[in-house]
Length: 356
Image (cartoon, rainbow, N blue to C red; front, top):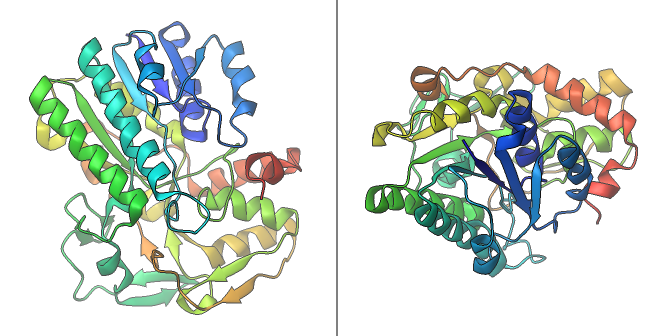
């Protein structure tokens, strides 16, 4: 089975490629990257050493994608993953649409032409902001927890299910990912392209490129260790906002199972995948972990909220567990420790991966 990975030198693409190599599939894997993301070059040499074929290509460029080798499956791990992309005054709205939606169109056309399947790495940010921002909350052990009364449809004890609302606003980033999902499913129904969509919680682990708007766990741990300024933004400025986390290597068994079952029912092609409730961590709890690991470091407070921020989002992955046997193996504490060890070994990581 020939596998092509887009964004292979990014954090998720690199981890998935390495996971597939560990399964003995190095000779089946190729990938491409446009290398515009700071830090992506650091993964190139290691992947080549492992026997992975690499190509310099941009998913936005039709001619680049047309020149890629034939494959049986595409794993789409290329994206501009920031919820602030296109609206932060520093980046272009057109560019985020071209990266995240235009790139998907080119990959879908590639799959149609080569009779290949595609696995899309999507995001929890396809879910509607307004009902999440207005959730009634209590504070428990330094973290927001939804009150168990009057919750909107699609939220249960394990978090958000796939049935939770996806109506706007969801951010430009979320909209491009949701539109990519819809287009992929149309290619499935119209042209028989096998499609799977994995809506991921926050991906985290060693070697992640850290910025405050993406890679938050890596950014926070590296910044804390290096005594760089940190700020709790919004929701009272106390750091109670919560995210779940998932190590991208835990996606590998799921993706392999999906590629081995191309005729799966349409209703089973979109699933949430995350560490769930067990991995849910607030910024305050993350700071407390860092204080215990590295020594105390003060965090500033900015109570004012930003338009796209959400106080709590945790995904319910029970559908993926039921259909695919998905079970995260790497716990949140293990992920944090892995990031911390990498941060200690790479004192310049923030400057390499996310220069200002």
